[in-house]
Image 1 (cartoon, one colour):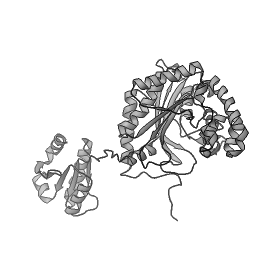
Image 2: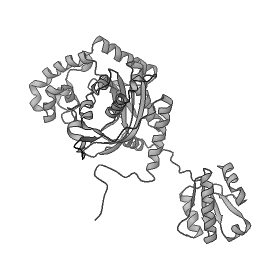
Image 3: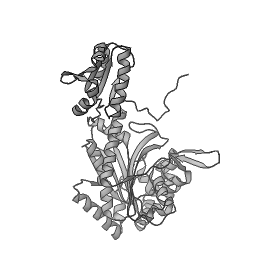
Image 4: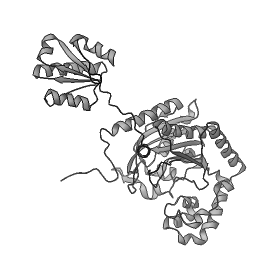
Length: 422
């Protein structure tokens, strides 16, 4: 019987995993600069957390969650996103009482959604995201957007488009909801079953439908920005002013509503405009979620965040032809000829590694030519050849692979010599 990776998942092999590590290092450094501290939450949570936090009318909750019952009869779900889990942790650990506000958090880890696999979209995928909880200042909205843009630009992407919108406050949403009902209700039978179900539950979700996106009524639907209260319009204008101050180019799209129910006020997406990237261009999405903390049992505290897929980031880099610097950084390859030389190689390998030198040796008892080819393939900076003569003289032949220069170095001086050269 043969086994294969489960549908919608992937193995990330050596050669590819180095690219992930490079991107993750970029992300962690940017979070350090912006002061977003890492939080690690469980991979599964109570199912009700996502039903309440993400929204019962969303595709995520209705169609895409991996839900199971444990031996205690409790309904648990593999996290399809992490904002709900982070907010749950924020409430449970009373982080709203911390002296420094807002609380700025970041996360990086696997999420799970049962959906059709497409390029850069998997059923198990890795998301990086941030949450800034505790401030209703439009400047923090601009900061969160700037952080997301910094990640992509620091990785080397250039073909980017930022799209923003405002979903307004509750008064805005209620007025707009009435207008949407009047607009769609006479022709709702022309839409898919999901849209028909959402009409009276959450008509805003219709605007996010992928099936009926080309329906003429979608193009003429009432724009939410036309219903913004004065307070909401002022807030949105301030966000745009801060983005202008930061030199971040954006487009306003009145139909940008995002796929999760907890959003209000600022929403945004970052897209790839690279040719050949694919039909689904979205790289990142986020927005403000005032009210979510209270919905999950905490105080009435505002928040904003975003999430991006590492898989789609790597796909965008490939589409733009961006090569990440993933050099292995092998300092030394030890070539041993004979049993005694191999014993010395094992000793030196351990010594070098203890001093922080990346070191490799042969474990297949190959001839010198084959070992030298291996050292070259692995990009070793230096090779050390050990044989009978070297053991008798207690010194090794150290070769600089790029220049071809070779020197005899006493065993006792090898660490110092290599450390000075590296």
